Length: 256
Length: 256
DNA sequence: AAAATAGTGTCTCTGAGACACTATCTC
DNA sequence: GAGATAGTGTCTCAGAGACACTATTTT
Image (cartoon, rainbow over all chains, first blue to last red):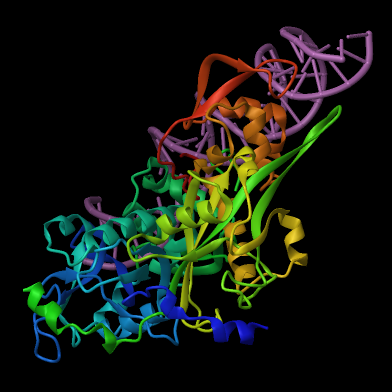
């Protein structure tokens, strides 16, 4: 039945898109160590600078401008798979947390035609990005502090993609256990706290004592029995671990 | 500069998708009134039954099966705009809350080729759906109780789209003010409560007294001073209104 | 000892949720 | 009055957050 229907189906009845792409906003947390002071912890976004010239020697679209890494999706993969592949190709980064957060398909957003883009954000611990390198299409790869993004020339509609990504990651960090992707498997309360403080200034999270107490009561965080680390301070600190679970915290009640 | 780059750009270097579509999961809340008993309130999903035969008289793809309403996106519109347009065309429903919640692009998901789908969910008060009608491509339009969906033959990968939609709407109803789209501009606490109870059985929401008290303390809900209605009971009840605001309720704290 | 982070003792106050009750209307 | 929904009075208890303090390490 479907076979017969298929024979009669003519995809050229409809105009089809000129391209299907994936873009990736890669976030990391940079920790700037200082002598005898607490480190400055801030969230960074990775951007690539588009080459002026393509591999074929012709001028590149939006050459010279900064952009999210990304590229065309192939017919045998999903946009999410493409995002992983592109990120590996363009920056040498692999195997990280990646989440789709938006579709950008406004007519005219790309001068090359009807190009659809799926936007993803990725979260990586800083050390993973140390292996990064620029590739064919990119002149340079660099991390930017979120506050510094305003002063940068961005390609296409990437300004919009980026501000949406920041809003999305902010709410995911606070409303889901996404923070675990910025952290090692086992972490101290102050490490988790530092991550959260990059996106909020909630006093309940800011106060060390409150947060140290609170973490023990959270159902989705478990103590790593007996284990400690001295990496964050002179005094060894307890280690914690995220527990896999669905969390919905209704805005209408106090419970989880 | 971009002009010159554009001349050298050849979109045929990459294979392009065979189609770009929008699908819409339309939810409504059906309230079944009973004599001398509280009404049975349940969430319903609108599906269309695909015609066996196309307008051209040839067999239709996935004919006879139930599916989400939807169709091809045109080059001069976004997927979201297409979703609004399609819904109007296929069901006569217009001007409702609509939100994108997922991209479906798994190779092979559609027998017609490389077809991308953007999934949206829509929320409508029940009376808006009274004007619904079947159209060209649809043999029938019908509302299904969520529990009854298991026993239905669904087209393409719509089973997956639907279960994702249900998960999404559930968390949006509880974590955002999305519930307002099921309600009139001004509503009683019991009307809001009935909406929430279709997706949760949280005791704090279930208890009338608790909820009646709670609603007065919620920062995003405001009392409609002096106004009352008798539509839900013999005794006139106070009316409330949603206040526009961003809400993030961190899972790490008690505050909003 | 000084400095730094980790962590606890204790108090106060808010607010959730339970139970019992009152209020206002229709039939 | 019976029945239904709306809404309040009051109690108890958990837990948030603030403040002051102790603990454990390095230099």
